[in-house]
Length: 442
Image 1 (tube, one colour):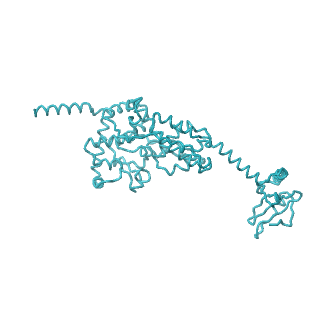
Image 2 (spheres, rainbow, N blue to C red):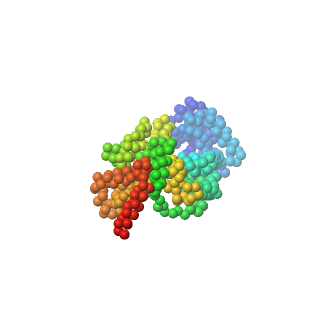
């Protein structure tokens, strides 16, 4: 569009006097400054622009928007732009190059710790609560200590391979999980232009550790040893109750760590987790109902509520930019469990990882004790599995029988942990009885 006939002085008064033209953008040349114009859009936005020819083509280079750019700043920008032209450089290309350089610098400074923070904010909300907790544990325990300070673009397959090898020597299954988290993180890094496309360093690391299906339960003797470790433990009461919820009620780790007081009804001896907060909720559309034995009711009654915290097992407080305090779920149950299982000598040095009982094995122990007591028909409902048989559907209606079963299982495990039930004496009694019976029949 041709420039307006009106020429203006480079001062605030003249520029402010310019009005918008509803027919379109207008350009007002500035006196004594070659090519410098004030552009006024039909919406009234004013900008300093440089009109010039470069290699035979008419071009416009935006210097800045008024009033953020003052007349004095426009003078300096005008001088700089003509300096670039006199040196054979197109100011528009120089602007593009500067923008690219700034982006490269930003990417060079963006560390794996920064990536983890953005990953938590933008990616992890789509994961289940239990998996989010696992991801945070993998980040804090493995990924950030090793790679946190490295720029995202400089992480190589060798860095990833070295980290996974180190983890895999002791915990090969966890190494596979860490690999999965890192692979997704660096996929998002490519999406967010923090790495070039097709450069995911984890994708090149093909080796995965073989995994064995776990079928581990705590024996009666191990429960006795664990009970002794509980009694001598310096862990917080909340942590001990968390582990007992896995053992005495068959709760999943994610259910325990994200458990809210509003879901707990001690009078009815139950916990009701809404569908959106438990593993099978999306599939069934039903809350997860957990039956509590008397021992667990007493445990929960004995806990002191943390002021302002909705969680039974308090996590951590995050302070937002607006200074609001938000409680996050507890995510570190694995660490105290490892301390306790070592104290109880359940984890043996030099043995494969699969031999060490994990947190999920507490839940498996609950199911196994139920089977030992002849209550196998109630297990699916009590541990929250989706229904697969007609029997499972019918047991749903027998609430009082489910509660009785939960009480019997919980009381058995609690008795062994506390030492009021002695499995060794029971075994001897059974042997004596069998011997007497054999003697009578001989």
